[in-house]
Image (cartoon, rainbow, N blue to C red):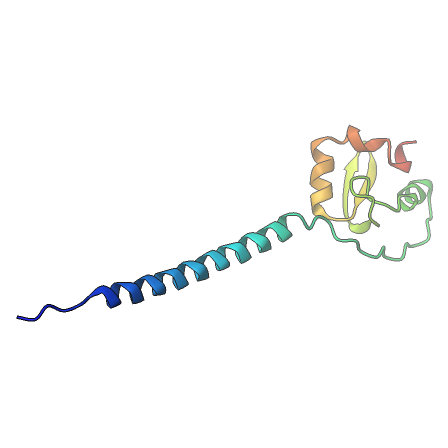
Length: 114
């Protein structure tokens, strides 16, 4: 009875596994990079919308604020919070959330409170 030689079969299988592992590792690296870029992208600078003319003192105080107190980017008039009776504007929702956690940390940067 003749015995079959299986040494070539396991060698080919090992090469397939190495190729498969390389593909899996490359995919994991790409996914990790994408997650990292997304997590560290931060707020995006946006152009400030044109401000309407002020008709009273409260409105003119709102318009005085041109930059986000958290990131320093131009404000987005659609993202704001009322704080101590005055509107505070932000560049993005993440900055609004940071302000909500510790408003006193940012109040000194705001013209509304000077």
